[in-house]
Image (cartoon, helix red, strand yellow):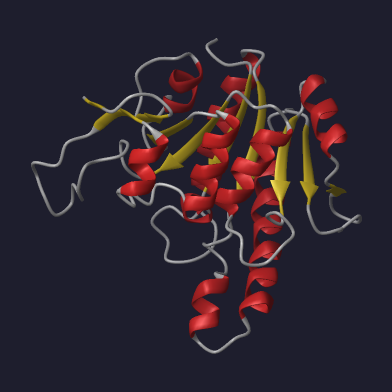
Length: 240
C-alpha cells in the first residue's frame, strides 16, 4: 500500500445518490463494501462525513436562520450520516467507532485525539461526526484538521467528477484534467475543490489531497495503492 493511515472525506450528497434528499441505502452499502476492501488490506481508515444531504447551515442562514444555529443543526445531520455508515460497515463485521465533536454519549463516543488514534491502531474504522464542533467551519476544514491530528498520510476527497479540471468540464468539452497541482495554484485560482482554510491547513502540515471520482467502483482502493486516480494536490502542476 502507498498509504497506511488515510482520511476519507465523504460529502453528505455522496450518500443520497440520485435522490433529491436524504440517504440512499444502496449507495451507502456500495461505499461500505468498498471500505471493507480497504480494511482487508490492513489500512487504517478514518472518515469525515458531511451533512448536506439532510441540512445545510449556509442555506438556512440565507433563509433567515441564525448562521451559528444552522451550522449546529448541520453538525447533528453529519452524525446521522456517520451512524448510517457505521451500521452498514458493522453489518459486514467491520469494527467501527463514531467519534463526535459534540457530546452524544448515548449514540457515539466524544472525540479525543488519542482515543481516535488507538482505535485506528486496533484496526477499527473511525468515523468523525459533528464537524469540528464549531460553527462557521466546513467539514472540509474538519477533514484537514482531523487528518493533521491523527497523522494521516493523505486526505482522499471523494467527489462526483474525475478530479480537478482547469475549467468546468460540463460547460467546456475541452476542459483539461490536472494530474497534479500545488496548493498555491488551487488557492490562487479559487478552484474550490475544498475550502481555502482546508487547503491552507493541508499545505502547512504537508498533507497531500487526492480528489477522485467516488462513483467509479474500486477508486478508493486504487488511490490507496498509489495508482493514478484523480488529481493529487501537493505536487507540481501537471495536466493528464
